[in-house]
Length: 405
Image (tube, rainbow, N blue to C red):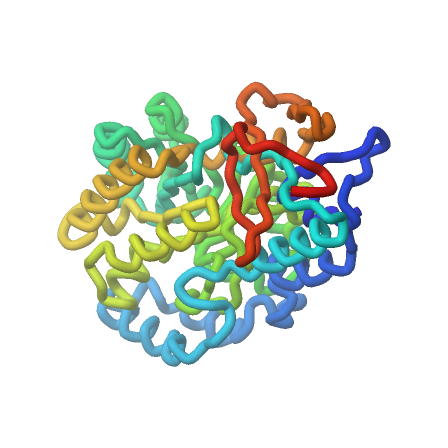
């Protein structure tokens, strides 16, 4: 049995838990190479490549004028357009590997269609998650206004909070976020850019981060500046993480997990970032339009994937950032309704994906059903073999015929 293929699709199983399809486990190593960024060659402190220079930058960063910081950031990211892999602006290499493996298994079994547990609850065509990294006291103080603006647009979000040094985190602040229907996550320890520099120091900080997670009642984590090392994440005592970009051409740490769906790193569920950050869009690419975001939403949506955003409260209080945020929420409100997308908190996605992973498809060619906790929200999907590959649908009028079309 192939855990990667089964985890993603939740295909029919026999009574003893084996897949009804002939699956080859060799592809799991390829999935790990992509999802865990092993193709980049990160290991130990190498996950924080250029650590000494970067440490110097973060030491003097508070003293730098903002225009100087932005100029240095643009120069450090120079040449990103020449990076061939992962594919910009959205990479779906994992989905292509999974699709090819399922086609091979279906063809070997003589099947033209196979049922699976549809990706999202109630048959939603995709999922949208909004997140806000609160980096300064200015962002903290703007949180209430941001929550009100997004509530008017029918949206809720998670707020990633820096526990130490940056600003005071009061119980009243955390309560305000939750009472507004939003979610609290932990955003590193002190946002000094050194979390993943050295293994021992990371583990020391991870212990403190875990304590803040318990104190804040937070289930989720995101690393500042999206620094990450998949091999170290087991030290974090959270249910889900949001530190891995789909494509990291414009991040200080290059790479990318090459998928638009949640996936597990051990027991930790990873919710990848699939859309460019607002700061990067405005201050690195110097683009104040919705064009790139709309293109990324379309590309992720074509896979029925997870559309995730980071918008910083620190940068959208006024000016171009404020205008862009208003335009983004208006666009998402329209697309959520038009495309039947699930607008969810990251914690809700975490709960659903864990339930879905434990579900199974029971039955035979006379009829299929989904069994497991949360199955009342699940829909039966179908992978249908076509001349061009596969099509996915959850139209339950499609009949399943094992062994033929």
